[in-house]
Length: 493
Image (tube, rainbow, N blue to C red; front, side, top):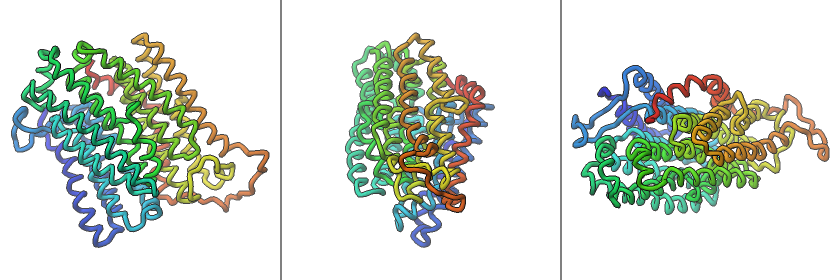
């Protein structure tokens, strides 16, 4: 590991722009969106630079105040944190570009608070991923959570209720995590993850350590929307604004998944975790149930945003299942799905926002074959993202599921293998019904007369980031072997 200012620089960018946006936004609100794009773009650029530096030099560390751990607090940019930071900041950059028109339509006059809260939430996400201290992780968790509650409240009439419900449930989850940290501190006397991980193997018989493990997994499971702790998610993603949903849905639960990875694989370790109780198996079972539950519930929805919300419950299950497999293929498949799902879900929620901008709704029952002529590029982007979600080659979604399948075969876990295959069929059901409405004429209604002159695509500032994200699913698919090779090098097995 080498000492570097880069981890702290990334966080400092968000601190700076969380101040600049209100300062300039009060004066001229139209400056809020460009500042958010600039701030997230700088953070994304530094994140990519940091990952390249990590690949050549190893993990990067920053000691606050020059105090080395365990006395001081550190930020660590290693393989796991670097990968998540790249995904988070890059996706947020494209979402902020896309949000210009939807923000004006859905919450006019509130653009400045939206972008300020969005940058503040990203500060929390980045801090959670970069910190090497369990208590500071909780501090950043609360920063991200409070910002997220406010962002969700900006939406339909039901949005404040959904946000309040998430606040109550999310606060309970954060409290459970903090209690777990407190138990660990009482028996180890440190909060540094690396320092604590060296002590825990000698304390695995301690009831306090076991209680801490369970409390932390349950608490973060709430934030990750792991079944059955997902109750806050469907309403939150459905009733919030399209811009907030496109920002929170692709990355919010992924950060919680990161914490589970860090706790179970790096802090406790799989051997220690399973020595105390079959925790990984239990987590895997919950993930498998969540995969099927989310897929079935998605089929029953007529609102596109709500369908995508239940789909998120299912997709987070793939990631947690990969973690529970505790082998290199499952690990690589889970991390690849973090990338794939962030891109897929961002593109799909962006498209939902575009349809709401032009049609005034995203009600699936009202979709018809005129959409393919009115919105040819929008529906093409939707088709690519939907097929990737289903898991058809050569798109990115196929390969993350493929590596998860290899992980289940490596463990001879045929039930989890069946869950992946069945869920892919269920995914096909709820996405192909939309593609059928858009690309196949309904004989009962007849052919609608829509000419090329009736095209009503969203503005270029919305279409370009959507097409880039959708197109990247093809690139990721073809580059999957290179990406997985890097991810296998991160694995702690």
